[in-house]
Length: 165
Image 1: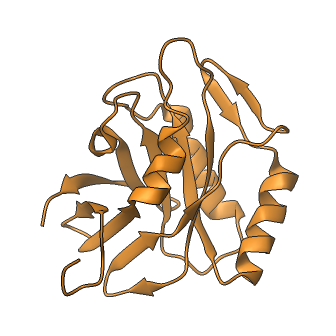
Image 2: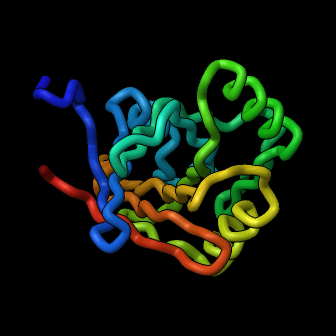
């Protein structure tokens, strides 16, 4: 553990926005259980943090698919009421919803136009005080660093790159 107190963290950075998104090994392991290999169905969930400090967002918790979500080989559709219940529950625990993650059956995932439109729509339609929402598309590869990481507002998608400090 270094001076920052962060251990086993994977970082993604957007230099233009001067922002970093950090993922703990625990959060990554939770998502990696659902990597879309072979003929597995798409999976996804919600992302949460407990603070926004020093241009860094550390993802503290990610949800995983529930039995009410609709999943297919090429689609993941979260159950909106279940998602909202989880957002409310986590808020009461001091965690804030900051975005979504889902899988693609690609080693280097590329967001579809639907992925981009959906995260922008969620940004516009959600009640929040955030400047951006996070979008993660999990790689089918065992290396989380190959995943697609971005932030979105109502107009733009800002790609983040894997960053080694």
